[in-house]
Image 1 (spheres, rainbow, N blue to C red):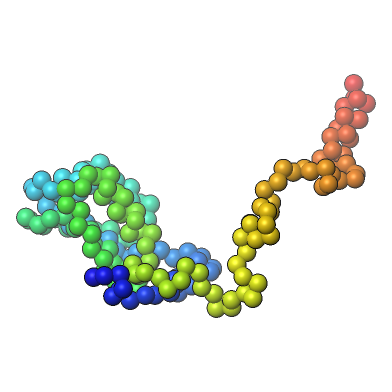
Image 2: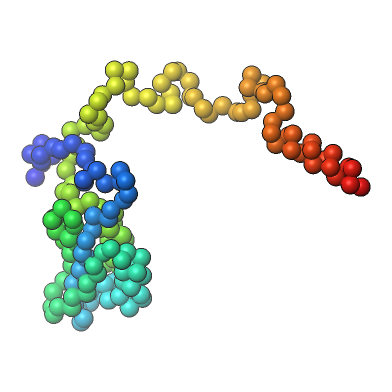
Length: 173
C-alpha cells in the first residue's frame, strides 16, 4: 500500500496515560513455538535461558503464556488494553531478538503504526510559536556559569558554614 493511501492520524496517548501514573497497555503476551522445528530454535533458547521467566517476573501486570504447537512457525501474540491484537513472526530469530520483541511489545500502546498529520499538535496553540533553546538567536542556558555578571555579592550559605567550621575547629585545638 502506498504512503498516500494510508490514513493519517494525530499523535495521541491512550486514556491520558501518565497523567497520574503510568499504566502498561500490554495485558497478555503469548509465545507460540514448535518444540522440534529448527526455525523455533531462538524461541526455545529464549525460554531455556530463563529470559521468559525474567520478563514475567519484571512485569507482573502482564499475563505471560507459552503455547507449544506442532509444525508451525514461532509467533509472538500481544494483546493490549484497547482490544487490539498484534502478531510478530519470529522465524529463525536468535534468542536476543526474541527478547527485544518482548520488551518492544511491552512498551507499545497497541495502536497501529500510521503516518502522522503533524509532528506537533496542541489543543491550545501558542501565538508565540514553539520555544527552543535557539529561539532568541543564541543558545540559552548553555553558557559557562558562574559568570562574572552573575557573581553573588555576599558569601553563599555553603561558604558561611565552611567559615563557621574553620572557626570552631580553630577554637577546639
